[in-house]
Figure 1 (cartoon, rainbow, N blue to C red):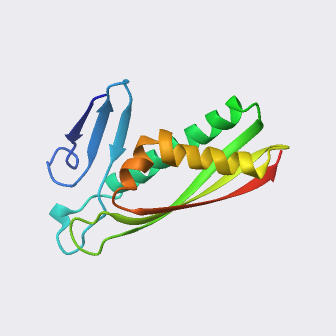
Figure 2 (cartoon, helix red, strand yellow):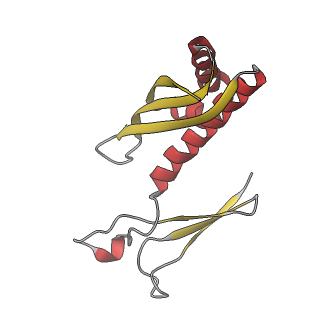
Length: 149
């Protein structure tokens, strides 16, 4: 796996904190920093997600992918899955994630709650590289709700 991240600068002035990532699979992802009123040259323009937001989003995508795949392989009639991630970060640098909570909303027909619970556990214990990696630094908790199709 590879990725190239390039600083975009702001309108060719080479200030600002915008970046474009080009992934090995041929996709692009734009990232930006938060504006900094005290030091505008160090801040972004708020035009895209922050890099740490993309880490959180990637983790959510990784685990949701696993949960859907595990449920489908179990021949469950899953029709939707979303996960809302909330996090806390350290107050001082490096401002790593210290707590992450993932709330899954799974939509389907006649899916037993135990199947969803098992799929989430399997993702976090065996398959989701991102959450397993972040779990070495942050306390990760999960919850879920089952919604009828």
